[in-house]
Length: 442
Image (cartoon, rainbow, N blue to C red; front, side, top):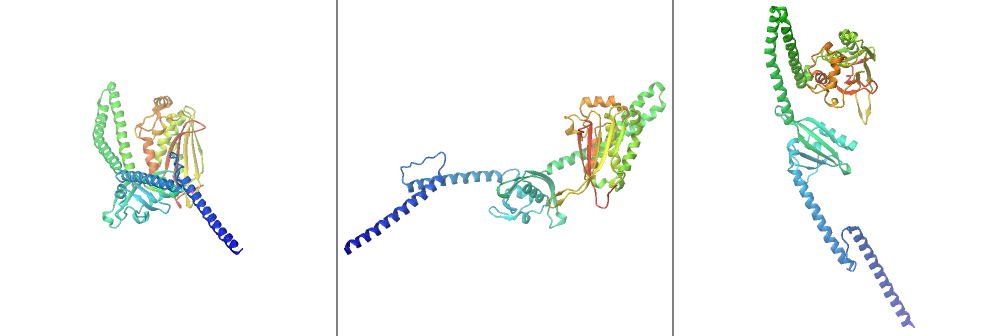
């Protein structure tokens, strides 16, 4: 009896052990099947007749091959970017440089970074503009561009150099940022050389034009009456050319040293608007054009009075050219309040909107109205003549709005051309920043 019981216990132990082994084996197979299911690819079907271990080995081989292919592709792309003629930086969410090609190192003067390192961008490059671009891209999660003058060589101020750089940032996964960097120095140098050439040419042309003007004046007083009209015509055309040359010289000066050429004083802009309009009011009365002002009774800003008078004369003159008889010219002035964007506060600015009820700009003209020598659509020129071109106070050289734009930019403002939604006439929108302690709005 004892033997039977012992055999039963032994058999129970064996069966239990076998069952435990079978359960563990089944569980191991189930886990392997799960691994295989995860690793299975859409274009590969394993032979289910093979043992699970063999399937796993084959999957491991396939995974290693795919990994090698991805590594090869990554190496190829990195090699292309490394030798690309444009710089590239890649930063993680903490602004650490993950990767930087040769061109970026050259443009940004990065000397203390090696592939495989992760260094903070601030340790390698001191550029507020680049930091601002990266912050903007990361916060808004949209691509952005920026052009700025990058200074390097701070250790020795006498040897400090600079280069104009254009950067394009784009958001990547997990807060990372990719930045493409390109030198703009050649373009800047070319533009500067062109401006110098135009300035030198204008200076050279002005001297013989002045001589021709003096000769024409002398001839006009000595010619018989039937021939004086020819001398008058020469004088008229010579004056037009002298004005054109003067405008070229003025525009060149504004583009090259705008901020340094301004003489800033506190000016009542509303009074300046009124005085400028009174200068042109006789022309408006001849054609019964009404001027309508909306805004404060006084607005004190720190501006260059002479330059801003030039802006108003050009804008009023253009509106008079293209407004119909018995038309209207409106000028609205209002303050744009501060707006908060995160922790940054945008400064107050003054908006000056000038618009009329003329034909307005054509869609093809709008992108080019501030370009020098741009004359606009033929139909618009025709309407200008019909509206009374003979009353214009400017030369019509095509430089007026270009000069206006440069003066506004020199005051750190903006100017935009459009057509007014209600009158459908030309609409010029000027925004000027106000300086704390140097503006009064009543």
